Image (cartoon, rainbow, N blue to C red; front, side):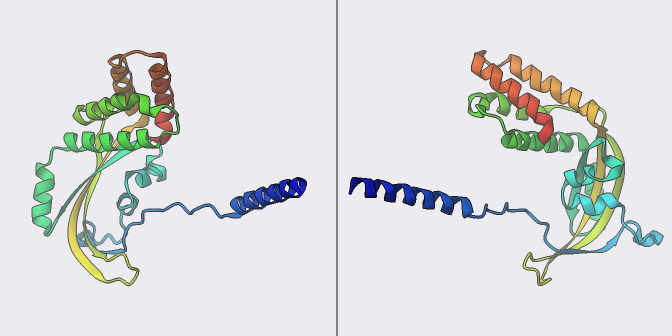
Amino acid sequence: MKKTLYVLAILLMALAAMGCASKPKPTPIETKTPPYDILQHKGTTLGITTLPGWIEASLQGPKAVERLADYKDKFVVVVDVTGRDLEGTSLAAQRLNADPEISRYLSIRVKDTFAGAQVGDKDKIETYMERVVKSVSEARFSGFLKAADWWIQIRWYKPDGKKVFDRDEFRVLQLYTIDKEVLNRQLEKILKGEQTAEPKTPEKERAMQAVQQAFYEGF
């Protein structure tokens, strides 16, 4: 009897393992840009019908612009000013100081990079990562150049796939670029500088080294 129960237990464990292995992996959730139409743009009055490639890519995010051939060795920041009419939106864009916007965007990107870094013991260096993000948000980065600007009038639809009207808006987009090597040097200075301020323990040192080594893979 005991032998029979033992064999039965083994069979049940094997079936359970097969059931777990056969379960499909969950599909990652992707954030998609809601459907839209571009009604007119800066080139319309000039007879230009084709938008610059970076415009449509920027609606998916700056990393999408960096995947374009023209920007493969660049880091990109798109400063985006939105309004109800072209005159007011253009005026707001002219008055805008791009430096704080660039720093703000980079701090968000650094925070996201830390969150996605596949390294252990990140919980040991939470204060270090928080200080790096804060330092980046307050820094002024040299080397960014305004590569282009454009305006578009865009009609957004509700994200239900039925093209139900949501809103119209004007957007003035300013494209800033910097050589990866130039920005990396400035970020490295911040990463290393905040490391010196962290209380030293072997565990924290290892965790900081690991997250710094993985940093540029995700950035």
